[in-house]
View 1 (cartoon, helix red, strand yellow):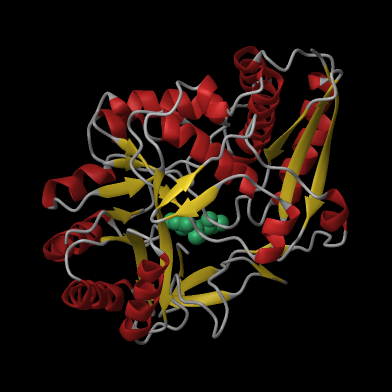
View 2: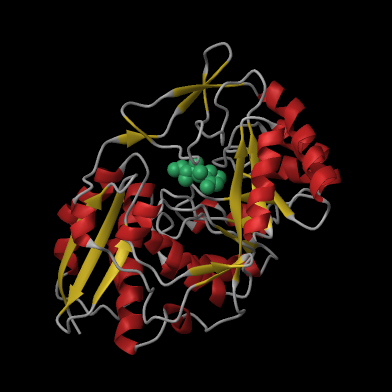
Length: 402
Ligand code: GCO
Ligand code: MG
């Protein structure tokens, strides 16, 4: 089998997505997600100008060699743009392999290690009562694990707070908005949120929380310690992770489990975090980490150190990435949990998919390949629109991590 064509479909059914479609001489095609939130067209250009011309004529079954060709062959390694482009190709090739062999991708990755993939979804509120209501609503939908975020008093628009009447969605059309941040107010507030949730909800539901890279290691240590009585499933991205040693400090002070990785694009971003056992969950994004091929290796490496997975599953990743995460997650031994942030109805219509949710778990479905397609005619009705993530400033105006 040979690759005869590859092209990009850039669309915005409520938010921007870049999708790679690879076609073969046997009429089988595969889809890869190449979306990098707020930097979409950089990945599209990388693929169009630099990778697609080298892809034509290759055998789509050679996922390892093709991955190495683009990773090593560029000379310039890593970075989210490069790795998202390579990841889109890799995922599309696994989709083709599955379709050609008439089997779901998970069967090519070791088969099912479990029947379903435990997922968590997002609860958000302007204040504690709204966050509580939101968790209860998701529990009523069947979720067994819920991430809870609430507005911090005195810090307008803190991370995870939805605009009135809308689901939480960070990217906005137009230029980046600015929000305010105070670590002091946040640290004083979060334990109250989880105390209330445990009092009202009891001990069974898994509760998670995303710090979104906003603290220093010692502040994160304090937070982890103050949340211990509420036994979170995890505390996510407690601080920016460029400095892997920073996590040693957090780890020494708290037993709250730590998850990190949604902005990583290589296992080299996490090798010390994993091998020194400073984290509990590695949550790289399938596409930004370079695809299924390197993520399978990363998961197997993490398994050696009792680190489990929690692949990134925000709405800025298309249903193709969601499917890839479910196929990989159901196959690996050390699945922890999968993030499930609901796509809009329109996004789901543009990307009809076989995966389903039932009673706290997601199922990849049994269609050959990844089980996701794209309705190109509908996609064409929703063209790309420039959008950005917000930026954040401290109360004194200093730019800080959003
Ligand atoms: C998460 C994330 C996202 C990111 C988003 C950025 O845990 O799902 O933190 O909501 O902010 O993916 O593009
Ligand atoms: Mg996050």
